[in-house]
Length: 196
Image 1 (cartoon, rainbow, N blue to C red):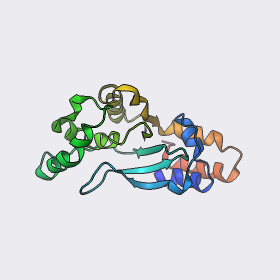
Image 2 (image 1 turned 30 degrees about the vertical axis):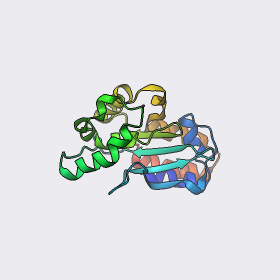
Image 3 (image 1 turned 60 degrees about the horizontal axis):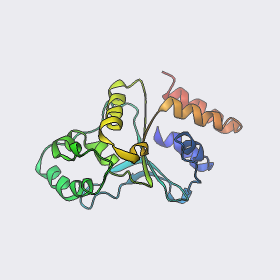
């Protein structure tokens, strides 16, 4: 779904429509756009991976986590490998950031919210994390709202964004209305993924 949605926008230099929906009005650096973008927060082992990434020409980083059928964000086992990684990679980073509520610096809370915590560790003054999800997925929506209300604090709160798939689709579709090929393509996309 991620590739099917974003790839035609990359090929036609139209990712600005995605950014305008999240109020980032900057030119896209297309040479830096990636699917499956690894994070820079880990020094060891497997890295946090985002489904999609846009870099602007003004060096803003926009990381996208795409959710469609998933009912939740992943957690982690409280085992030796995860504890080692928490102590070597995540805790030092947590101690450097001011946008994550100190209550969530504990290993237990971090492991319970493992995927989303690793995602939001990538937020900084030039970096945003965007979740695209289905608003009908109530369990996921509540978790996203909890993160927005309880976990992220301070001026970088607006660097954590979430948007419903239907809203993102409608916005992009409205903005490509004069391209008959893309209109036909996105009609098929809608029928495949969003007409349920």
